[in-house]
Length: 129
Image 1 (cartoon, one colour):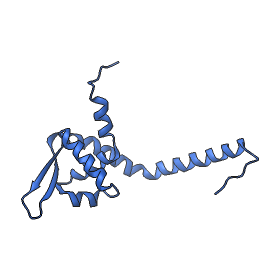
Image 2 (cartoon, helix red, strand yellow):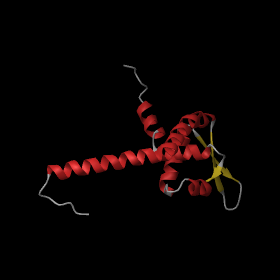
Image 3 (cartoon, one colour):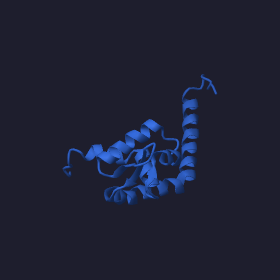
Image 4 (cartoon, helix red, strand yellow):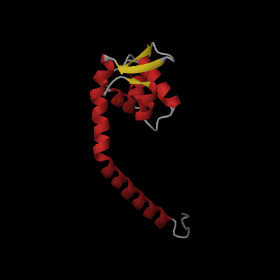
């Protein structure tokens, strides 16, 4: 078994998060101001977007630049480290998009099968819908 650096699980948790994947994938297109990034990553909440961006910035994957405008605007861009992660994030996001129908069909089949086995195990009980 390999020995992992103590931060490995923390970092894997961050990079495996759905919002991290979506944000990195979106920032891979171009640098974006916060409001535009929020619009493109809907349904992520403002709070989750802020927390995820802060974690990405802390780990050196995102740069945050305050633009000299009135009122001040903030722009986010991927760092070289973030761009290196973009390749992996892109594969996961593309795979999910390409297979969403098959995954949904499998979920529905599983749910139907599970529903039938639960009903068979409890013949006297009626399901409420």
